[in-house]
Length: 302
Image (cartoon, rainbow, N blue to C red; front, side):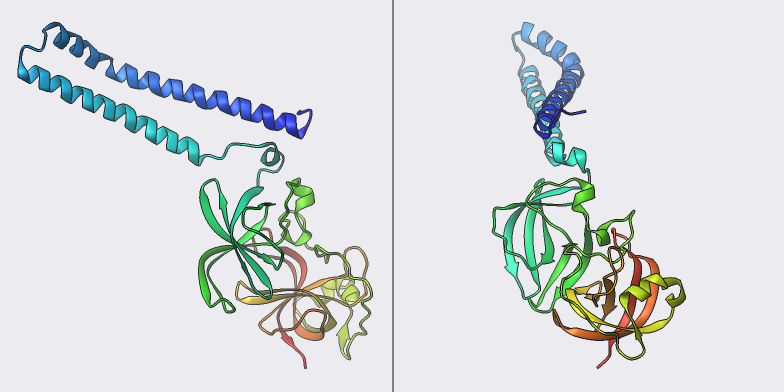
C-alpha cells in the first residue's frame, strides 16, 4: 500500500522509468546481436585496406543499411512508448479515469463543447453548460460516445463525441466520481448529481401518480402507460436521438425522488410539466447508463 498519493505517484514514475529503460537495453542488445556477423565481415574488409572498389562500396552499403535498421527500430520503439499512457497515482486508484487538457471551448445554451487532448490524441466531449477555459485540466471516468452527432444549435456534425455526466478539476476516486446514473454496477435509483431540490411541491394531475408512489409500486406499473407530473430539474437534449428530462414533485426521500424521462418533446428548466409514457424497469443503455425506473417515449401532455 502507498503511504500517500504523492508517494504513490513518485513510486510509479520511478518504476516506469526503470522498466522502460530495461526494454530499451534489451532492444539495443537484440539489434547488436543481429549485426554481430556483419561486424565480422567489416573487420575482414578493414584488414584488406579496401584495395578493391567493390569491397569499399559493399562496406558503405552495409554501413547505411545497419544505421537504417538501428534508427528504424529505435523510432518504432519510441513511438510505442509515447503512445502508452504513463500510470499515475490517480488512475492507479481509478483505472477508468481520463485526464484531459482543454484545447478549445464552444458554448451553447445547454451544453459546453470541449475539444480536449489526452496522451496526444484529440477528442470532443460535451458537458452540461459550465465555465471552461482553454489550458485547464479536467478529470472524468464515465462517458457515452455518440457518432455522427449533429448539434442543431451549432449546425455542426461531430464524427465522434463523448457525453460526460460528471467532470471535475480534481482527480476523484471512482466511487465518489460516478453519479448514480453513470454507475454500471449500481442502479439509478432516483438521485441526480444535484440531489433533491428544495421547495418543490407539485400536486399530481388527475389520473397521474406521484414519483414516490411509482417507485414504491414499480412492479405494478412496469410496462404500463401512466401519467406523471413534476418540475423539470435537469435536461440533456438530443442524446441518442432523444431528450432526457429529470423531474421531481417533492415526494419521495433518499432513493425515490427523481424520475428520468426520455422524449422527443421539449420543455424548459423549472417548468411544471405532465408526461405520459411507458414505465420500464432495470433498463440498461450500456456505457454505464442503468436505470432502475425510467419513463420511455413519453409525450408531453398539454
